[in-house]
Image (tube, rainbow, N blue to C red; front, side, top):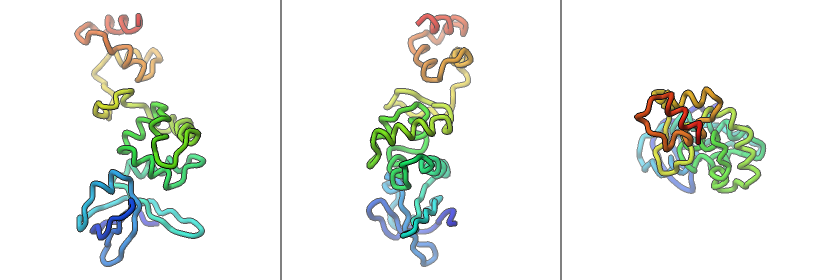
Length: 191
């Protein structure tokens, strides 16, 4: 199997790139973000997924290993083929897609071209326990938090009590951060 390709971008068309690797051109289908980010004659490296069907062989490329792993998880879902998985990954970077699935946000997944409501719900149900904990909830304009804030002891205490990250964050939303941890937790529990 072809694990990655490294070479110059020779052509760009319809969501695909032709990567020239020492005189051999590999056509690689990529997500919208990767397609927009590259320019002709640029040296690039894409991790690839080699999809073999009865009638064709296709390469799907990803600028990060995390995106490739997310793609591989998506295609395990019944009804999600490689093109639908690539469309889902075109909604944002791999972390945004992972986070939407972790937050059971099927509406986000449904925005992908060719993905209907039932398929989006199946993606969320099948993968939400496999993608890890959500890192952000309900703040579309805020930058994506990539790690749990381990310095917030009140947040950790609420999660230890069984709250999800989303619920704990919401409960602490209007509680004064300058209060002692125990008092912040008590105030959050009252809400």
